[in-house]
Amino acid sequence: MIISKENIDYLNAVVKIELTAVDYQSQVDAKLANHRKTTDMAGFRKGKVPMGVINKRYAIPVKVEEINRLLSDSLTKYIIKEKLSILGNPLPKDGFHINWEKQDDFTFEYEIGLAPTFEVDLSKKNKVDYYIIKADDPMIDHYAYDIAKRYGKMSSPEKVEEKDLVYGTFLELDEQGNEFETGLSNQASISLDTLNTDKLKSEFIGSSKGVIVEIDPKNSFVTDTDVASLLGIKKESFDSLTSKFSFTISNISRMEPAALNVELFDRMYGVGVVKTEKEFRAKIATEAEAMFVGESDRKFQNDAIEYLLEKTVFELPEEFLKRWMVTVSETPITLDEVEQQFVGYKTSLRWQIIESKIAKDYKLNVTREEALGETKKLISAQMAQHGQSSPDDAMLEQYANQVLANKEEEKNIYDRAFASKMTTFFKDTLALNSKDISYGDFKKLAHV
Image (cartoon, rainbow, N blue to C red; front, side):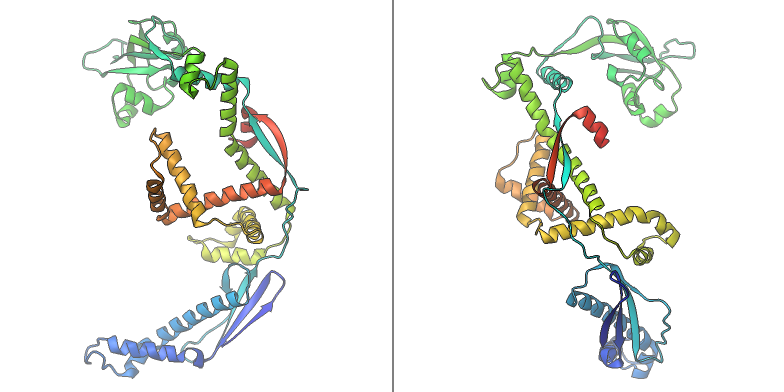
């Protein structure tokens, strides 16, 4: 076997593999002999079928199979041995005619796309914006009100206000707007936030117990699923419903926020930690801003990626890659269709190449211990969300190992940990142009 490479240019090459019968015939003969041992054919005892019959039936398929296996193995080993950094997979060159029956010697040629050679400029002279989300007064007011409500008390006022929960009974109306006994009836509670018209909300606000409000369920609520549940029917039944309903208010429930005083502060943060409303608001601001660091980091990483994509210039073997995309598509696709998708694919591939080079040059990788630690943090956070306390470390590690046993979950964890490591690397390596910003302005900027 002779394997050689011819460079077409610095991004494209052709690998030529020349085979003679010496390279594959012994393996072919061994497989044919094995076929003879296992072939069960009428008129012959098992294992005694004449070799001529075996050759007639199996020689060409076995020859093709063995040569293809040899080509695949040899090409892979050659690429590894020569340390060729390739993009996609080798593509067999067109235009060759092979006569499997008559040929013993073969020449195969494969096109390969070569990864570009380039450098990534990473230093403090490269400046990328980093947005520090600050908690403004409206946000602090919102969080303070939520905390006060969480520690507040329920009351049953005489009249409905905008944020109240209204209890009552739905009764189906006939075409004349009268209640009828055989119609739908259901007791439920309505949060005014679920109503989608100001007119209907205004009919509730200021009303007292015993007031009847007429409701068209198809045009009054934010979602059909909400109102179907309120009426006590399935979504399928609601779809065919045409009736209007009356709703008789039987009770009004209101959460009275707790006063912003030392009693609330002690319950929230522990005795003596926060003493004044000013300290309380400062504490809320600090906690809110800490929660936003993750969003700032994601925005920063995306901006750093865009910056490096624009700054790092190199070419790709585009025509090769387009042909390769046609061959690997799960569904039939034409070159014209590939052209339409190629801009997005090219950007993604360019970043993969840059990211791989950064990871290699700066030895950035995720160890098993780091993946395990990331998994433990995720499990603990999920349990905290559901009000559960985190288990001891031994049990937590057992859970984490179970998660990592799932290959898809394992990949997600490693990708997540690597992204975090890459963000930290960018923050340490690039110059950060820090900018304070409100969360509202940040959302507009980041489109979140």
